[in-house]
Length: 386
Image (cartoon, rainbow, N blue to C red):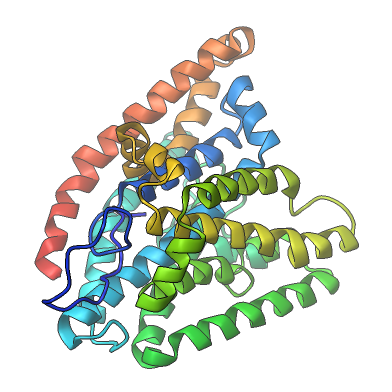
């Protein structure tokens, strides 16, 4: 969830500068804007207040996490492709430093994460709860596996359960860079095969009675969403594919159509826990793959059509700023919401809409403190490990 950086387009010294709507090296604000959409979807799904909760229910705001996953897979792969190109001359050379990559990831994710865990642990201890197993589990980024496999280390503590997505991402970060280093030119084929394998494995699990917690939190059953973003980065690193994508998905009409279709798909989704086994099979066999494909297509569209209407909206300074805060917002918003309700429950019940505004103000204030005071100083150190 770091600042959006995209893969380097292969050019030579004779090539002219890329046009404004070409996919090229550099920072693309619209990716941060898309991340703003994803975090707002997630927060609206967490019952912060009546107005935004209605939106979250209508558009199944939980899908915002999947938008995060697609973006994360894309960004991580793009960073590694760019580093490979700098060191080896081609994006698929696999010549990047795993050590430096993991140091940069630690600097981006861990400082705020561990401070958050320390704050939550302190709050529980002040209340007389001295059980440390949940915090050890979360500190090791195992929250998603604890939920998926019912280990019982985190007994659904409300301040910790949302960390499942960060656990899944970190597990992906451990696996994918090493795989990419080995696969090199065969990465596209391998990723496509992995996505297909996960698709059928997930259907097998559902057909044999796996709970939605198992499916939704397991790395083996959810990694295909991250791999969809990986595939976007790998494909757009090839000039011929990038040009075709720009003409077909990056044009203004396609960009609007894809954005509208994505939100219609969000509304159509429902929840993975709903319905019979057949309903859940349909959900995982049709609904989720189609929605993930649309998310990936929207990402491709704003990358290859930066002058398009949706890309311009997402590039506005407001969504860009919210996107930069997305990790901080995701990390801290449950703590703010639950503490607010605990101490101001009567006010929340009597003045729900006003309380909703106050909560969002506090959530953004905490996110700004986290970003500017905790995260930004460590982010500035990342340049030492490029």
